Image (tube, rainbow, N blue to C red):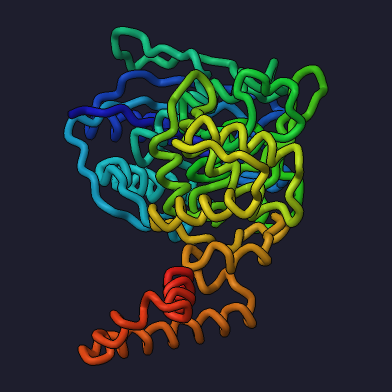
Length: 406
């Protein structure tokens, strides 16, 4: 099946236009050629948004490739050929090798004092991102293909801020799925901080024109600017940052309910995610939040919880994690509060790395003893003895300990 891709020939290599047009036309079907000009004050930011870099950086690709008008070719590849490829940053991606090969060839032919005068999309999803940023979210390809150049003075969506939070997320969702972790999707305008889940925080930040707040590499806190001067703090979580167990995060992301703008989490996962956040990311439980959680819980469980029992909520969270093989991990973002005191109550649904040294040593000792007990109980004579002993008061206590830790 054919697919569209984009090639950009940056300003300082514009004298290679004829060569690049002929080369692309021989290898693919050129659909359209645009000559794009960005407002000079937005050039640096636009390059950083396109490449998914920190928007605070003054150093940008424009210093090497020029900040004047550039050409953007949209081509059709009728025989895509996908393979794995390691890019210059070291990432291994599944890409269209036809496009990669053409990009490297064109880079070799245009390389003067700089190597990267040609940019291309490596996959359909990257083309979708690039095209919506470069040509605007509402761009529509003309019906008939043409080798004539279309002049287009434009800017990236949201370059001077967004009209609303909903507008920003609606644009982003056209390019990459983003999931609301907590809060009311229909009332985001009144939120001062929004937590979202995605695959790549830097790509999402570039799409949203969101600037990073802190200098720490482990922290993905960003600031979204609205046209009315209001700023919204974004915590952009990704599947692999251990904010929640990565297997759970992946499940939530894949199965989130897509709506216009942010995708939302189903009721069941949302409830247990709220439990996890309250007990793992808060060192002290909040009474008003517990009342809210119990109300949510009673709508989902067969038997209602008659009183405000923190212990029972933690026990049910433990059971949920164990049932789905989700293991608590310590968040990579060290600024996230992490309640270590509760970890022993969630065992064995906790990774060893999440425990402190003393608890880890104690847990390993318990696991070792439990294994000895298991091996011992496999001996037939002792099994017969156990059948006689198991219903005694001491036997019941041993079984309770066994069920707690084995």
